[in-house]
Amino acid sequence: MAEAKSIRLSEKLSAVPAFWSPRIVETVDGYDVKVVKIVGDFVWHSHADADEMFLVLGGSFRMDFRDRAVDLVAGEMIVVPRGVEHKPFAAQPCEILLLERQGLVNTGDAPASERTRAAERI
Image 1 (cartoon, rainbow, N blue to C red):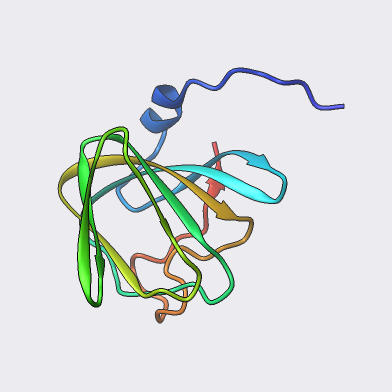
Image 2: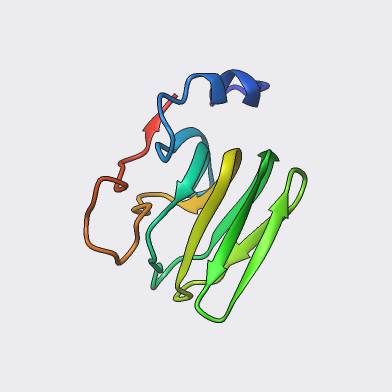
């Protein structure tokens, strides 16, 4: 049986090597809990079969949708429903906790690019 343990997110975030490089902190019932640092623009993409949850831990960012934008600050979260095209943007560095189905590719249905990353466990 696995042992329950506390996880210090600040330590995990300090181990993230670069912006847009999500790292898996833990797995819960088939979902990866990840931390990521972002700045600048991501790519337009969607995930046909999976929702995504973004919880802002530090800083702020904007989630762009084709018909609107949602601004988020520390302590706020957003769930992007499956199939909805979206693009995160942060004017300044931002730290986010993600909840995503295991194996989800961060760039979804967009062509592979310099932003595409396989999430490693830290």
